[in-house]
Image 1 (cartoon, rainbow, N blue to C red):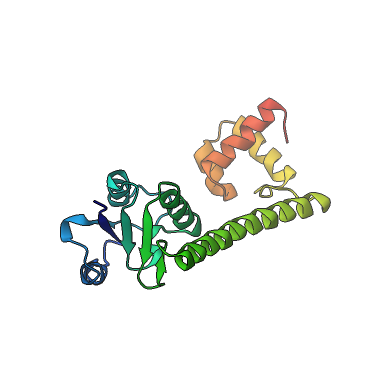
Image 2 (tube, rainbow, N blue to C red):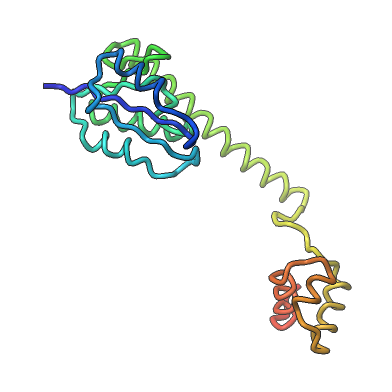
Length: 192
């Protein structure tokens, strides 16, 4: 017999799951079949509740969420989860959006959402590539400019050679110790 599973997630520990749990209970999902996550809204954070639900779910089961965005913290995560459910022939119902992949219209809406998400990712890649190409065409450095001019770098090296402590030099030049050491090691290696 196919199971109906619920999933609820909040993004911060200060938020409560109560509203989503009430919606899922009203949709007829039993309490022991509702999986939850209460985690920070950081992309790529493990979601043990979602992982447990996906591990339990079998072909023909239905996953119900209060809203489609509960499936992930980014468009990519939501799209991956929808795709994974579809490949495993697990149905999805998103109550707020009215998505139900057991119907042809629901499958079409989920496919459109996945297509739009994929388009958004592809456009982002294209924009980043265009930005890199533009920078190269204008011969702009892809990295941050040096904190110190070449003359100031040489001055730092001369003072360090006299035995001045590097941490005091870094403070005097307004740079971090790591940056000071990078400039000093660049002089030894012959770069910059």
